[in-house]
Length: 452
Image 1 (cartoon, rainbow, N blue to C red):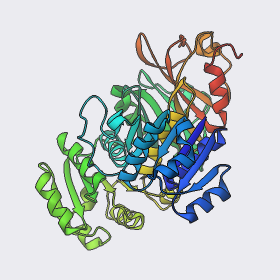
Image 2: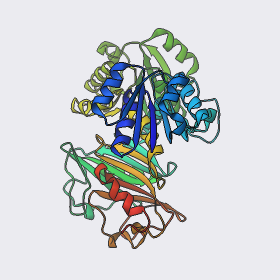
Image 3: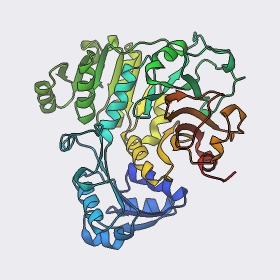
Image 4: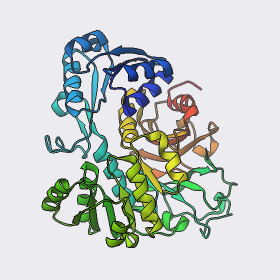
């Protein structure tokens, strides 16, 4: 596939790296010579220095022959113009990444907030900040999850939990656990290593465990593994796009919300528009301010400003004051592991969220979506089973599954079910697969027609 990527910041670089690794022909475009040099040194891709919204640059990049054009600069307007112009010049598919909330109400319809198809004639418009806020909302409504991903139009959920020392599941082989119906264990991270457990494996204190389940069943399995409830009081540091969207979502479901915004003008604007919830002006890197606002009594603390260092510092202070769960926005995905090592429960990168959504457009036709887990060691895919593919030949217990591959759930004519040994995948079913990233080719073979 011929791909042009405009903007080699965090999103563009990650997408280019993934696509180049998959054997696609990639041309990276950026106006900054340092980014072009950095990309050329580290990736096996072609590069072009130029302004992404300039027709001459687009012509030189050959967007008229591109199968996919990804517009991921730090300017919403540049991305929209570049995507529109590329489409008009003949690009097969175009994607634009946005960060502001200015365009969310442009075309109301069935699309979920933060992700729009066909808006302005662009194939996909993805708002990384709105989608990051949605992910945080799901975390707040869970029973102690550190991360939540939704699949099958929100009918299947993948939740990450960390096992406390008194978890009821410690030391018990997975095959002996009495899990709630339509739930299962997907993967485990132990001592920084991600692996797919087998039935004889037992879980240990400190393990980070990925749990699959039907959305309505997840609270039950979370209660078995960890101790927690949906957050009733949430403090948000930052009244930007993420903070505003998240505060509105939480207030709608009756959560007590306090937004602390360091910019006085922004705080005043948000206070006028946020009907349910409180807004105060202040700096959350000041521990006295956190004490004044009783942050330690909150169930959950989100630091969502544009400053990574301030987010990290304020979240650590909130943790010190007694907030049981804290989450920091990280604009540089490579630092997520470091944040967790420092004691933060959760770190979310809007850039990584955007990249995951953009990459679905690079996948083979039978792969509908991809979410990366851990530090990219594993991924969760929604894959359509082809006629006469190996996955459809027998019930799962009778198939020889590639090592490092787990079947999570199946969406078929009978609805949604979480996989077990008796599950038989039918042609046309959409299957949720968790796999080590290096096993992608094995997954593709498993779901393609007549390769085994």
